Image (tube, rainbow, N blue to C red; front, side):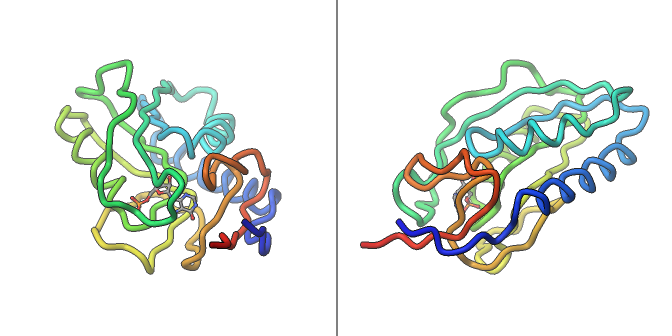
Length: 176
Ligand code: IMP
C-alpha cells in the first residue's frame, strides 16, 4: 500500500468538526440527543465531535459495530451487525455518526435497523461523502467533506485494519 497524498490535513478536519458541532448545537438546543457512533471507523470523529457539543446539551453516547470491507476495497453489499447498542433508542432523538458513506449500503442498513426501534427522530452525520459511488439513496443531515472516488485512510479509517491512527485523511493506492 502506498500513501499517495494527504487529502485533508488535521487542521482542516478540526475546523470542519467544529463547524458541524455548531450546526448540531443549534439544531438540538433544548433537546436530548443520543449519539450513536459506528465502530470502528467513526471512533476519532465521534470523540472530537462530542467535545465540541454544548456542555448544556443532554448528550448520551452509544456505539454500534457493523462489518466493513475487511481487506478488500469493494463493498460486498452485505452488512453484518457485530455489536448492538447497549441502550434502547425508542422515543429518543438519535444522531448516527459515521466516518464515510460510499455505496450507502451500510448506512441504509443502519437507518432501517434504527428506525425499526421507533426513535423519536433519526439524523445522520458523516465526515466523508464519496457521493459519486452511491448505489442507494440515504438521507444525510450533516456532511463534512464530499471527496473523490479514492480509497482513503486515517482519522479512524483503515486499510486492512491499519492507518486508523493517522491524524489526517490520506488517499492510498493498494498494489496488487
Ligand atoms: P458503504 O456501505 O459502501 O457506504 O461503505 C461504508 C463503509 O465502508 C464505511 O463505514 C467504511 O468502513 C468503508 N469504506 C468505504 N470507503 C472507504 C475508504 O475509502 N476507506 C476506508 N474505509 C472505507
